[in-house]
Length: 92
Image (cartoon, one colour):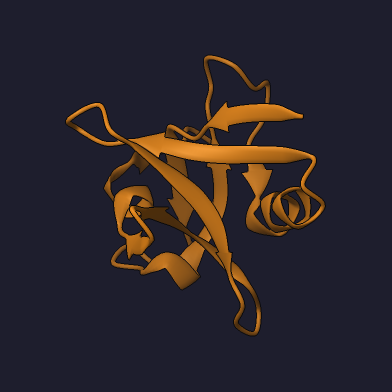
């Protein structure tokens, strides 16, 4: 089981919300971006965990929001947070 940091995202809309995240990545570690569907599957299968570090160095874990379709969002101290949306865009 790997514990993976997400450092960038891609959105389907320039002013998108969590539901509009299409891909995530960490170019220093991963050779490619992952789709949200892939991340959802990995989280659900408990094979990997994902997180984001905020500007203060605090960890926020990534979880699955059960919607149609499911999407990912960060949470810290039991509360959903917006840390993913603060990340820079992944290079295509």
